[in-house]
Length: 462
Ligand code: KG4
Ligand code: ZN
Image (cartoon, rainbow, N blue to C red; front, side):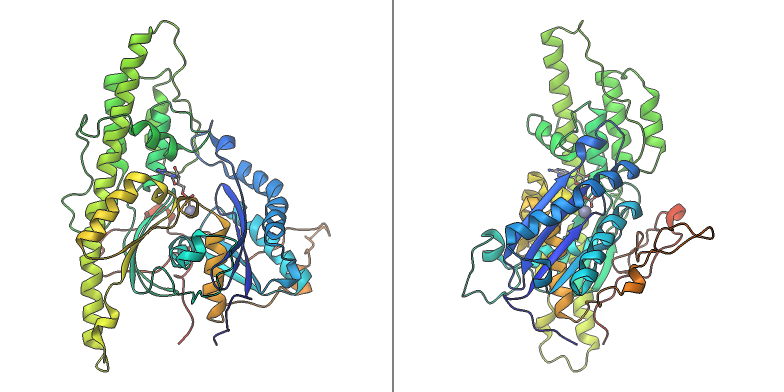
């Protein structure tokens, strides 16, 4: 059943699903009390993506301090916590495990309930942190009624490094997937394009490419807008990526190891050696350097133009689909006294790519054309962070979805056949759909990766 939540409810959120170690403490009314994060893009910059082993090591090194900082800033002792929320999936198992182990030991030691959180749900729900409070962290707002910024039902465009989805959200845990990625997610396409253009990706490929695109002409190259002929809400960025690669090869020449491009295009995981960076060439004079730089900027701007146009077109269609579904459900419910109560309330854009200014502006006009408010989390809550997990924790805790602290038995380290300590099983869901696919969505999930997929996330029973 429901658990009362108010300003005295305090929840710690822990996020380690990919390459950011994040923790935050949030109050039940949405006040962010403490926030800490450590990124790893510098560690992974010389590789073609996030390297799971390196990521796990970096999480292990950072986790204690990140959690300690968040608690210290909040001035909250672990035993004062109402619950600890932690991302259990989807993500890299090795990385998820670090956060879950930390949450389990905190909960066990201080007898605090634990709330398992779905990473993509957390991305979407952070748009519901009450506004006044969310923006003015650390100020107690007595008059706050904690009304969520993004009320249900809403349409969420979730764009990150691993996911590209349009979701109709009708309640906590009630999500319908209107469209998903047929191949690369947009964040991944940003990252790969940034490396293709030889940018310094130590601060993340997305931000680097966005900065370069600001100096370019988005109409200089006419890259194809993906999937125009498919009248659904799925996404594809593989073709655009190839078009960009061909433009780079034609107008900037093949880089030192041209094979790397082919290898890069052929792989579908994010882990490959990055050998695409141009070696600095002393023979290029200043004029030539400037010319090449202008071409790079034009390619970046044109890539972003087509990429965001694709988001725009799919989101427009998804708004129409969402409205149709909600109207049909209203009709089916004979007892529906107030049909308009189930109208679409707003559009949410979240996930790492939602930090991008062009994405934010473009989706703003799409929403306003549809007569809907657009709710955007602040950029630092779009990329992975602890606040989104803590807030998803608040929403789930309220619905009674917290679990008891792990018992001594659950915490015990098992022994293998030879009597040596073995790895303890921790409950992780590395492949975990956010919801069930809408009947109108025709795309398939990547077939090679359908093994061991958990059943979709659920809300409170009944
Ligand atoms: O949500 P997130 O932090 O991690 C995942 O769950 O994947 O998203 C990371 C992705 C990366 O691919 C990154 O390049 C992209 O979001 N990203 C951006 C920007 N900031 C982060 N893409 C475009 N423009 C940005 N400003
Ligand atoms: Zn994410």
